[in-house]
Length: 120
Length: 133
Image (cartoon, rainbow over all chains, first blue to last red; front, top):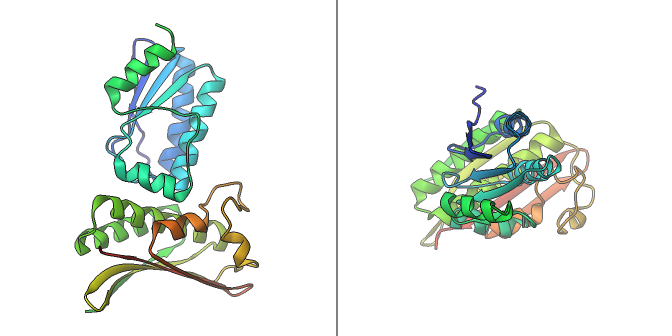
């Protein structure tokens, strides 16, 4: 039952769209896969799209927050896009703020934000 | 009209099973997307606490009715080490796992009613209810 989340390369960026509910193992595997992919491709930006995700618990939030910090250590910036209203509400009520994380409403705006951040 | 369904929590996959069960019942009861997310998240946190701290236990989902209102009740039980100081775990930011599981205060905020009963050495019993508005 080890499904991996596809990571696509687009110019010097990586694109990830999480399409199904994440279990712990898949989330941790994704963390590792993304870092390897950044290393492999020398990508300097990543967009992680969460449009299809309808809830995020503290574990998934921690994995996401960690992978953003890890990517930063490797020199890649991450933008999170597509957080649904229900997800934003529950995260804050749960007490998770994901501070210092770059976000955008959708994939298009996320890519724009990434370009700005990378100064291109 | 009593309905109760349970998932045994033994491994990480059971956390997924518990929240799927909860989401399905929440949908059946007619909860909107935000409350569905609240309920699913609360179940995930409670199931993870069982997995992390007690090793095993169970999460039951119950449809509850009171007068003319309907709701969903989560009952999370384990026979783990129990909680020494309940007041302390109900404080925001308190953690013994380095922030792996969620704080119980977060779960309390997501739900309408929250009740915790724990005996050190015996186990923990948490009940949380969300009412349909």
